[in-house]
Image (cartoon, rainbow, N blue to C red; front, side, top):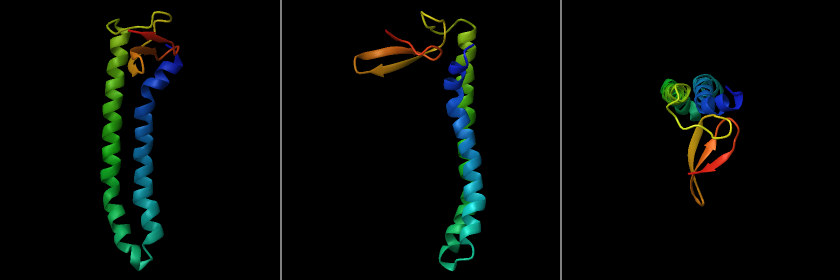
Length: 114
């Protein structure tokens, strides 16, 4: 299984997971610690602290959903029930371009028209 295909398949869930961790750190630690001493921004500090778990949970939920969709596509391809590239046999994404729909291989990057 080519690494490029797996990277393209699981890049969005990994980015959402990293965003979840980063948002928890920024909203939960950085913003409150920088603005808690300033009376004008104390309300923003409190709101940031209360929004941190919600933002982190929402991004984590998105990461889990995208992971399961990607995993289901990978299993479908491994079982031979998905459309494959005619040149390398890798998974394909259907995209819509200027001249109509086409298939883009996640493994080798070749494009095929439908």
